[in-house]
Image: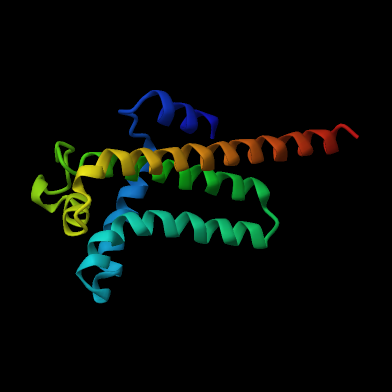
Length: 155
């Protein structure tokens, strides 16, 4: 978990194994939210990347599985980094997209529609900062769980 935090903070080109899974969730989000209108269809990819880890986190919390919960915090923070990168690219549209067509850039479409395109990097910075905070919480919680396991084992 610390590795993901480190990579997201210090290696902005990091695209680890979990990102492929998140990409599938992102694309599914567009299809799942399609019945709810164009705006939610466009937003659906990023929104689903946030909803899925939160649902898993709630499930782990209900089972008192705090290590699983800590992983979900890290996963959610990782997705916020992913989304922040996508938001920051709204004006430039230089990221490679599935299908290769940059006119289908979700955040370009959303921020243009909301007359906020000039704020793409500022919004991305806030999202990224949120990702850092959430990932740090996850890493600290995970470390605490491991410490408690170690302490209980040594008794």
